Image: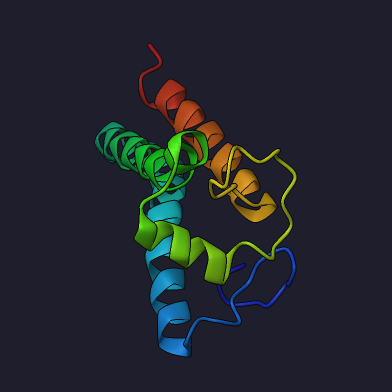
Length: 126
């Protein structure tokens, strides 16, 4: 939803072309929607796939946002961050000049982690 609706300064989609917005919304919708479908189905195989998908998503979020925040970003990521996210709502303290995860992504990452944990617990409960 935040990929399609301009909620500046919470998000900053103003720099995205419509095609980029739709592509990102579609990928995010599938990535985040599949675990819900898997859980609702009760199918252990689908839930296991969802756990793997969410684990990969958590790793992606870490290496996209948290590693650069803690240890510094590549020149490319720093440029992308400065153009797209630097003017959004930031609540974490700065570390040097590293890109800081904005509030939108903090919420997203917390929800992703909770969904990963809950899906794993439900998929592998005795």
